[in-house]
Length: 83
Image 1 (cartoon, rainbow, N blue to C red):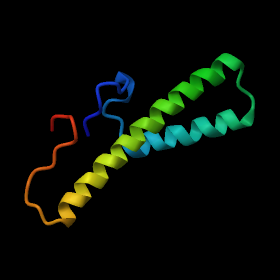
Image 2 (image 1 turned 60 degrees about the vertical axis):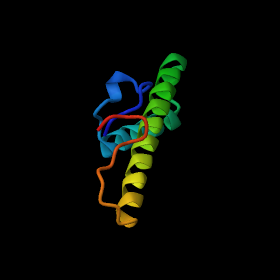
Image 3 (image 1 turned 180 degrees about the vertical axis):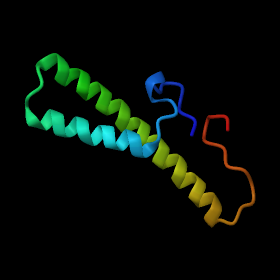
């Protein structure tokens, strides 16, 4: 699914399931309390990027389902993006 212009390049093309698994792993690592401050900040930043990426993919999937449920026979195009 296409990402928004502010999506970091390292997340472009990342599948939802892969991003979610990485996010869950980051949370566990941060909760362990074993990261140094700089590593915690970097993990937090990566986690927020992963969270936004997952939310965008879920929103796009929801829009696609709404189109299908409405019985509209047209191609789906993400908001503000190209197919």
